[in-house]
Amino acid sequence: MFLDDVDENVSAARAAGWHAVVHTTTPESIERIESLLAMP
Image 1 (tube, one colour):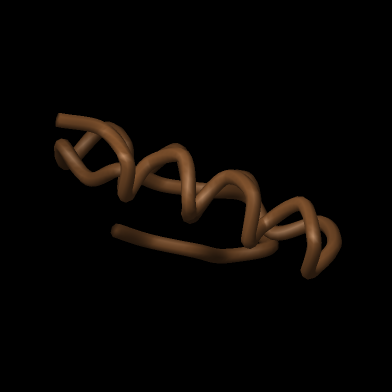
Image 2 (image 1 turned 180 degrees about the horizontal axis):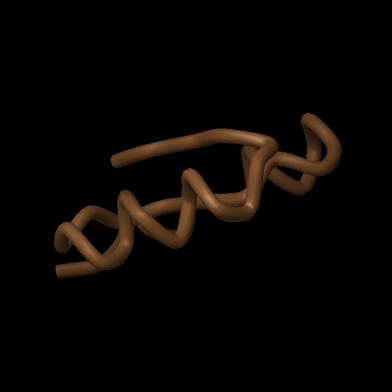
């Protein structure tokens, strides 16, 4: 899992096969990460 506030870095992580989240606000990032962690 990858978390960053730079779109290009998140895109690169996704291209490499990582789950990646663009950080905008802490509550939003927590929500996104929790949803990814809940994936089977």
